[in-house]
Length: 423
Image (cartoon, rainbow, N blue to C red; front, side, top):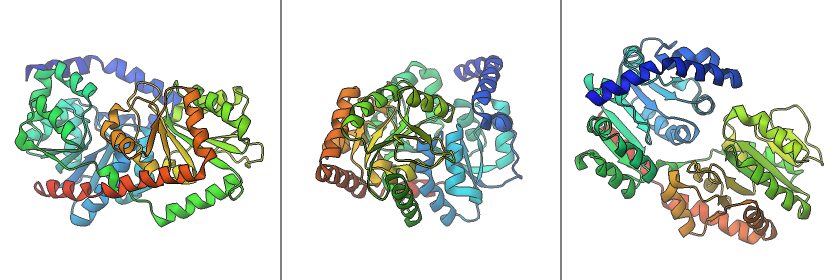
């Protein structure tokens, strides 16, 4: 209790710095401006009652949550679904994939005044937190109101577990207030147990990210866009997706080596965060590449070499246009991003060596010869070149990735059964 009070006091004292950071981010990404009040629990929502609150931090968690949310809407039509995210990219995915079928706002900060105002507004009967977004005051406020809290599709890397362990007096009461933890793997479950979670609170279901589905509409959209970009198959597309700062220069150096041998190769470069779109486009131009923005009205020409994916909510569409995928956040020490979207399209997948956020998925893909790891521009160019050189190798590797998806489905049903205990 004392640890949570100290944490709360520090958070309140940090509010001026938080506001400066918000204003700074809003200058770089104007989408932040009109929604700053949501961070403090001030929402435009009507008063709700017995809603289901689903919290997903950003893009990956949001995409994973969509099949779950659709099932919740079918099973419990009397309950409105409220989904909160923390980033503009996550928000864009909610709008693109769920539209007006849910009420969406940014998650309030973990301050009692903000959380209490938000809970009063939406009156949830259940909070479902995707993966590992644990906030002491939010969980405490729910427990005080007898609102069950389910940690769904839960994962906990060794690095994150070590961080929580350092704050044991804060972590243990928070974990004790959780109603259920539905973990992706036994390794994740073991880390939660080592932090003090009661074994009766946890079960292993597998990752619901394996339950990804690609609609026929999206498949048709991808085919049309790919035909447009490649002149109906005259070019190959290498996608470098969800790249982080520090990776783009490496990718462009690799592309420079590849373009000398395969001038018809297109690089589709998709930065993770929207505030970096223009920066990455300029980096590509300075490297000497004919560069086009996806959002621009410019027509793709024979000379176009790099397309910057500078739109929100289209990554799954972009994967459908690609022939080879590199998944970012893995050449820098950020732990990687979700590889299963590329796998669902049957793409051969390359990543860097930093994949601790998706350790089990990475190991599973590697064990099935569906994932290749690299560590610099030379090894990246070499692996992409091998896939370009051999359509058979490309196809077989992609098929193995798709087979991993198919053989690991079913986690969503197990998660829904666990949630049903609290409905």
